Image 1: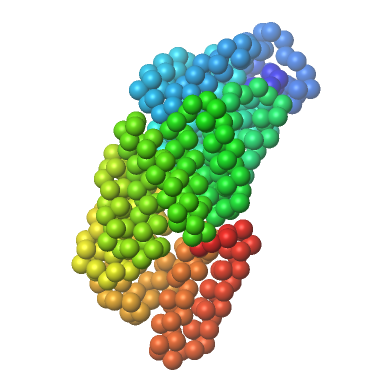
Image 2: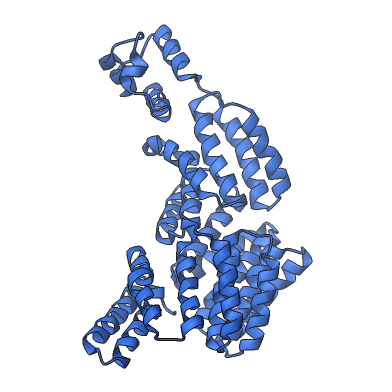
Length: 425
């Protein structure tokens, strides 16, 4: 990054106009030429601009700084959060000495926050500031920048965007030197986002690449992560025995390391297998085991299990228990816009457990609140479930035109799902 790009970056970050920065130092056209790399300022003007921006415009040994940040990243990858926390606070106490360090600081702060607390709002500020110059972030910095962007989008449940950012990070692997665990972790995250998009073949391909790296580097917990994805993929294609085998292998690792993060995901998916096999009592037991393992994990993880457990209560017609869990889940959501999708699901089930299926109040809620939200987000998997319910209500009430419209929407949702590469829902 040249001097002009550095000056423009910090001017924008500090919300200064060219007029405000140039005042008493140089003319606005001259500052514009500096920022565009047309002219090189004198040492005096350079120093005055640096003082007004409160920065150091001199270059640093970027490789040395990057090495320290990658060390933090490795602790996060290893789930050694105590070590990561210590390193992170050391960076917080050390002010950035240059633009290169400032950019790396914001990128790795973003990665730290996302991998420890998933606080997307705080990270949005950092990444927006770095985005002023994302077109000139090259090489290794670009890898970590796109990696952070991918994580941020993932936790916002923007899975298509997340998947594309991770693929952009993958493009940086070819011409730069990265450690094997970094490559493996990126492959895993590509698989994870592809899995959320029901791109089963892509998810399978990248999971195998990640697993190969993790086995080679003896990253046993990350091997378990891959086994969980493989379990999910085989569950989708109804290969229940293969799915169970992968999940039980993951459980062995989870128990060896007493890892509740892994156990939460494993029991969740073993519960899903029981659901698909019609074993409701076993499914409910496994979902509660998952919920217990997730009690100290982020709320989003708990909500996923609550959602599947509530669906199981509906399936086996246990409205009293279902309604109790719905109310507990809505308290966790607490109007947080990040969890709006979950909130709408839970409100739908509250109507079902309170009034029964195909009630007018339930249908009004679906038409006015539930369906528009998922339509806006293009979440066709959920819409393929909800459209037929509304269609059936209108059919039962001999309103065949409206019924036909929603049945047609259901068919369109299934077509969209097929276009996205979903092979099983």
